Every structure is written in C-alpha cells, then in structure tokens.
Image (cartoon, rainbow, N blue to C red; front, side, top):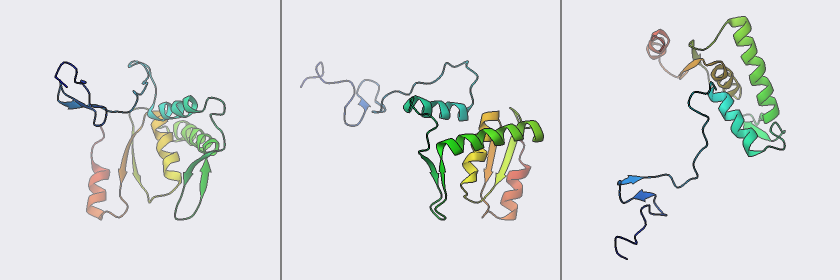
Length: 145
C-alpha cells in the first residue's frame, strides 16, 4: 500500500500519520456550548438523562460501598445531591467561587457531597485523612484559587 492510499488514522491505535498525534478511537463527546453556564454536576446528570431518556432517574444502581454493601440508586443520589446542595447554599452560604476543604474517609456520602458542591460552582480541595498533621494543615491553609 503506497502513502496515497494509506489511511491517515490507524483504526487500531488512533495514530495520525500526518500530525504524529494519537487520537481517541471513541466517539466524540457532545459538550455544551462554551458560554453556557452549567456546572460539572449538572453536565454529569445531563449525560445520565441523555443515555436513558425514558427513565432518567430510574432506580438503577448508582453507587455501591464495597466494604459495607450499602447501595444508592440514581433517584436517591439525585435527590440527596439536590437537597444537600440547597442546604449548603441557603444555610451555609456556599456559592460559586468558594472553596471547600474536604477531609473524609471513603464513604458513599462523599460523591453526594462532591456533586452538591460542584452544582454550586464550589471548588473542591480534597485531602487524604491518612495524611500527617503537617500535610493536612498545609492543604487547609493553602490559599484558594
């Protein structure tokens, strides 16, 4: 096969012979317009609705805590995320531009907290609870962006 008939992108690796760059072999992701005000959490929930338009908040499983066996359905996850988001905004006063320092063990409630914070536009600064006191205090004292 000569250079003229050789494909530009290798279908097995995604390597583009013209640009010498690897391209994703997955279908393109449809992103919202650049100037649309949407949070990361709203975008993630929109993907769920897009992939199952007939029952977007069905009771299919969203999260499982492998240590405890605790399970959370999409409808519970969505409801708890919206409830916590409302509380964090109206009672605590968190909003876009704030930073939340989160020091927590791996619990099924952490994704609910993260999605709630992200839906408000809050920046999340996670820390490892197994870190030393010095490491944690350095993270907590760092200026927010």
